[in-house]
Amino acid sequence: MYVNTCRLEFNGAVFEDFDTFTENSVVFHKQVNLMNKTGHSKMTPRYGFSVSVKKPYSGEIDLDKVANATMTVEYDNAERHTYSGVYALESGEGAISGETELTMTKTFGAENRSIE
Image (cartoon, rainbow, N blue to C red; front, side, top):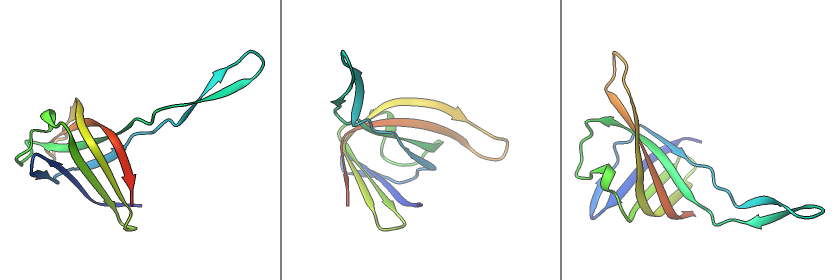
């Protein structure tokens, strides 16, 4: 499955210049030790993703100040993942090669994810 578009909307501005997109894993249940067996506890899902962008990136959005934004990821099979309540969590490592621009990793958390 391939990603066709990634679109981050924040305060009326749109940013689509992403190099890579990585969806974080989501934990739904956790094993807990009980007296004579193993039980399962329901967890609150924590959605998130990481993107890499070329620096300096163009656009109206400062990705380090994103709060309560919406990220829409559209895949080639017409499946669409919409993350709402997106907040910037971390601005990570930068990587550079002799032939390309500096690429920065940005990590985001989201309050909810819907799949259409």
